[in-house]
Image 1 (cartoon, rainbow, N blue to C red):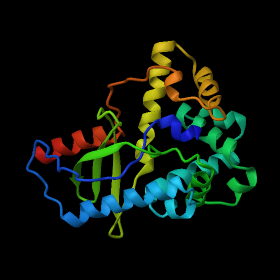
Image 2 (cartoon, rainbow, N blue to C red):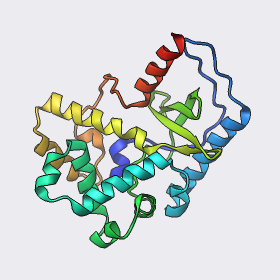
Image 3 (spheres, rainbow, N blue to C red):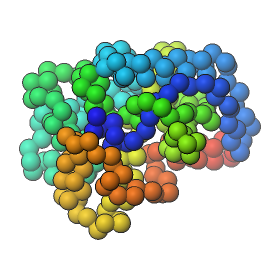
Length: 240
């Protein structure tokens, strides 16, 4: 499960989520919203664990489906020259899809089907595998951002749920910034070229290697697209 290891996060049940308040007035959310998030989280965990692709794909956001369809399309059509012109993180994801799925699967599927296929192979790049804890929900309208804790209680990254058609769904695409942090750490600390980073990361896809063996990827930078930055930006807007 190399892609799952790539983000190195673990799933567990979601219980007793305490509300977290920002600098502005607290936004009280209905109990059914918290229950809805817990239900989605638990269902997704079970689907991934049992490799039920279709069930898992129904629990992710439209934004995530569109992202996987975009990557799928590029994986089908990109020449080596066009691929090399894309951002490094896109290159890695495109190459990963080509590695995990056959040309026929890529050609004849859409974003939701790609997610389902990856779940069935145990290769969906999500922060969800077995036993972490999720708490500190912050609601902004139809979005809820929560923090991931490892099994020792250490706070890690944030993850996002979005409410679509009255159902809370996982926004897998919002976790891509974690890969950016890994890439930036490798580039900064090991002075690696983009080509070397792509080669080293792709070498882990068939091996039982944790991403920690590549480098210490601790990076406190807040990237513009990560949930942490979204929280900060929206909090600042609310306070104005």
